[in-house]
Length: 551
Image (cartoon, rainbow, N blue to C red; front, top):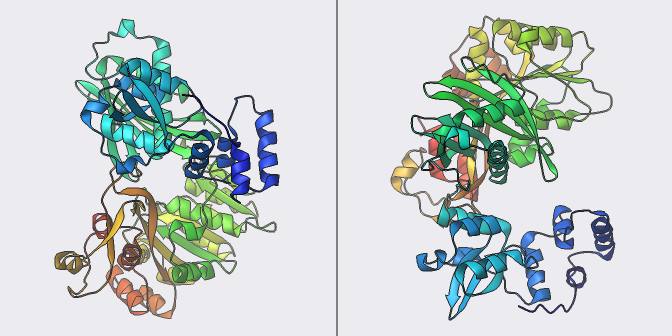
């Protein structure tokens, strides 16, 4: 197909008022210095000057190649089989529809001739390109062909261990990590079973199957991950922990590796931490403006304890990181002890628990108190010794942040009392307890308003005749038919006041503290969820699955 260029992409973007001439000049200079032959459009996307859809729209105008929204097409099986799956995945080219002797295929890069040539050779037809975003293309491939993409490595493969090439195992592990990052997975699970190896990704808090691998590659696969994590490959009888630093494009991934011996071999979990990612602002985490104001007011003052509660994986550490980042000032000495250090915070002194060396939360906290700190963050309060030291730090003029595992904010006070902390010490040191959960965000491309049923409303303690709007999603290519994309926090905050202090002094149970807090206007997790469901951020079903019904 002959391509006629009328105006280059940069000129078109300037004429449309999307990019300033100075910005284009800077991008062109960057392009001239690059050694990988990057396109100007990709550089502008990385600089957040345009998005991929804008780039594609102007490329279409420049090259006279149409764009396509794959979400509006239902691809036929007869068309999908015109190009083998191996070619589809290798060249990122998707057959969309056939007209006469021409196969129209979706591609990301219209300038790269390889996908078109591959489609032409595989189908025996004339191939014409349609420009699509990379996310839409990958999502469509996932939906129509499945998520797995390890060519030659599936659980039906008859692979003998002596035939396994080390290079292929290295490529396989790199591919698993790269794919998990592309899907924004938080964890990778590699689980040996009797007849195969199950690979799963945790995406938006839910585990999804990625691919089953042949059991014959279990030993070299696990050994490769252990080598990357500087772990003992000869030890398979006890759990081990390791760390992998992985370069992916311009990003650096920090992977925490954990092994666990099971009946059929060692199970491995990789936790992905993007250390190139900036810490979120508090408002981006999902705080409602009123609650954010209360929380930020609680940060004012130079002493006291602020606790963040919630189950594992509820985003507590992220909230604390965002809080510390907000409080970072030139005249403040901020010191942390964490398990592990998940993100590198500029100008903050971070340390990590090391039990082999005798560095625990309690022992580190003792040392921190001799470091002239202003603000202290303890990754987790787990025992009486740590909470005692935290209280001592608060009493001596420090502000202390930490996490605690309780179901709600009120239960945090009960937990402290159960650890043997005197009520008067709780009331004089604890400034407040923030409870949180993470729920999946509704996909903005396919969410829709609907009328909730009386049964749904009753689970939230709402009358059946309520006129509240609610949202749900249908599933589309953008969210890979899940209906959700990303997560947002739900929060509730109890601040110490005279009423709460009186109940704590009486050693009142958690539900009494909670009732009093609600009476005084506390936003509960459920109420916060309802606000977000009305706004279209999440769904009623997601709130119920995460929090449970109103009791």
